[in-house]
Length: 425
Image 1 (cartoon, rainbow, N blue to C red):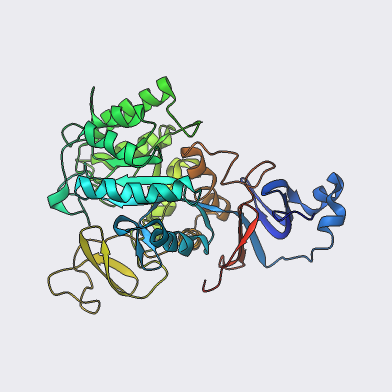
Image 2 (tube, helix red, strand yellow; image 1 turned 90 degrees about the vertical axis):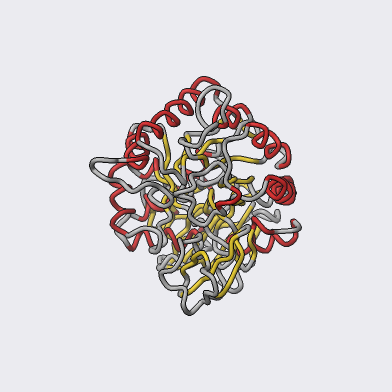
């Protein structure tokens, strides 16, 4: 193999249903040509290329990770960037840690700010550096707003949806909405407009009832089945729940709220639920239990990362909100608050982990490795309509590969078959 996108990787290959102890991935032209056991590779005719690679029993070989909810990293906040070059530094922070496909997430802001930021981030999508955008708000619950600026929340606006999709140049992929907010559900509402625009609605930041959540899920699911909305020529879906449990009315046996509806929908295959399994947003037992209840095919592991991912504690901005990070936990800053006295004050304001950290945390909490990896690769790829393109190591897929040590810490990353500089990881 002589082309620039050619390589062979050997190690413990994590495939969709099992770990192959002595596996290899062969790629050429930026695409995977073979992935399987060493013996299968030899039998298939790859002997000369793979047998010269030394065994690597202390490494794992994973598909490149896919993060559908990410507000930034490396000191860069996607909702605050003024240029594509600035935003790219945040993209690279996560790429160096194995996230080769990413949606850049916005937060609630004034409409003109949302449109401006969407236009900037769309430049990276056009260039193929990110897969697209995720808009978290502004059609969210005041009571469950979390780190979103209450002054910028608003009722559902179809006009804003259309303006935002235009500003994003067709790369707005998902949008978080609360079903109880006026103008969101029903005929002529935001949910309908999103699907018509090829944007996947995501239920979140809601204080709604079970019935309100069920109504949105039913509307979106029916529309997805009837129209098969497409983005970049690929079918989207199923719909998602934005960071299940966080930013939602808690589950109570007499007032079950939206969580019960989301779990039921995921169990029957009508929804995929996001979990920020970073050890901060959710207890490990909660993450493990959701995997057990609905299965890994209906769970998305996400970071909800903000600017502090990969950098030091301190004060950061998340859209119009000031955030203080202390001991790796980001919270909305209180008046006069500092990194030292912020403990316990203000709602959690995003994550500071990379997606491989979330996978590692889920595995440490009892989620099987194969399941955790699936929920950070092939499941988000399916939601975006990218099955067979990213999120898996199979012939024809993009040659995005993450090689880790035995503790799931990155040692090598390839994207489109090209090595990513992992210095500083």
